[in-house]
Image 1 (tube, helix red, strand yellow):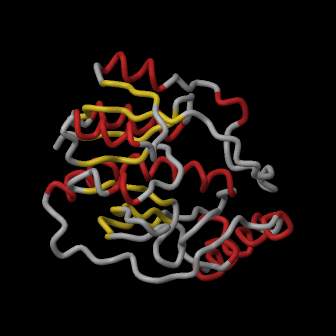
Image 2 (cartoon, helix red, strand yellow):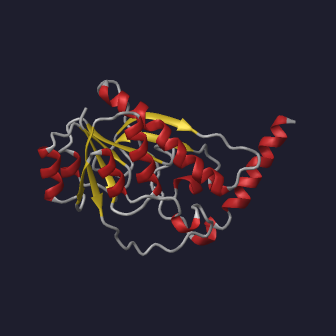
Image 3 (cartoon, helix red, strand yellow):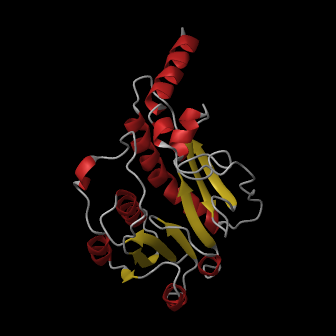
Length: 235
């Protein structure tokens, strides 16, 4: 399959991890569609989830050039994106960094667009999926799915729950979620190559909004309480 990657046009961990993994797995990447940053106006998280400073990240343009992949800076939902997908005869696409893609772009990719959502769908739909899973005492994990015009919907390729260790912090779990997404990438592409017959729909679930800071501030305590219950169950 000829693959396009929806990416960000700035150093970004998920974009970098996915591009490196696709190269290692010898995926037939024909096109990287890189979107410029957009000011979202989202307030800073009450609990830190990411490494400060962004050290060790390489610009995706440099990575793509070294890999020999066509790199185009483009607004993802534009007519130009559809032109590029058709020019390169793209079969499938992977999201390594993108805002919500519109239906006309999704439909321009014959086999579908794979997204890796940091939550188990449908219960973990929406924003701050890991934080809501901790707050609501649900399993934490990743869902690889083929997107459609709705938010966190479509057909499920695979799901993977991540373990919680007794000394994990919220930061640890956030980083593990990132690593698991990259690990699932080759299997998700292989499954898509086998066709979509028999795949189940994501199903219905509550769509979570951005977690309010006063609730997010409770997440670390909620996680410690879950770990305490886990330790009690072992004893």
